[in-house]
Amino acid sequence: MNLKDKVVVVTGAGSGMGRELTFALLKHGAKVAAADLNPTTLEETAALAAHAELFTQPLDITDRAAVDAFPAAVKARFGAVDCVINNAGIIQPFADVKDLDYAVIDRVFNVNWRGTLHMTKAFLPHLLERPEAHLVNVSSMGGFMPFPGQAAYGASKAAVKLLTESLYAELLGSHVHVSLVFPGAIHTNIMSNSGLKQPEGAADKASKMMLEPDAAARAIIKGIERNALYVHVGKDSKALDKLYRLTPRKAIEVITRQMKKMLVTTDVK
Image (cartoon, rainbow, N blue to C red; front, side, top):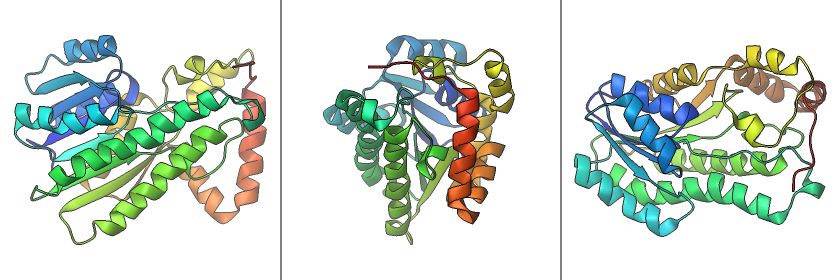
């Protein structure tokens, strides 16, 4: 899809990858409807972009009624919807399943899985009206292979993976393209927000392995432009995908050892 003059919806646009996607899309000549749960950070995105073709709206994607009303707001501003990027998501605290409260599990699934489903159901009829359209769902490396201490997060992102692959099958022959994004480690504050501590020196090592959000945004946009079904963002995502396909058990053992070296978990209720 050529993004110039297309109307693109981006969730989670108040920070990180969503903010950089917003900036990059505007540079590509797209019109952007940016949504985020946090109105303050969303306003910051708008102020930094300072672009006439940016429309912002605070939105809780777990609120189905609010999401169902969102397409009308976007069409009232821009007249159509050509692309939806379901980027918004949260990570769980690093904890084993036995130590996770149900409230934490429910919140992760409500945002990552149900939020993506709400947005897809709300916008798909409008995408089908267009001569060409695109649906982009962001999963994770944790959506195709397990990471210790992230079972609920991984399960929610695996659900997004299969939903998106099913949509690809359902929409074959239509004018709606479908892309599934697997970001690797992206340089954001998601780890500290998850109650995570790192041993001395581990933060520097982890930082070197992480991709900057603007680079991740460019990779996603490149995937959209070539109508790719799978978009692996970062060398770690690409490498782990290959290793997991080749030898799943070995891949799980490798990532578990690496994470034990890098991380020290804290008690998180």
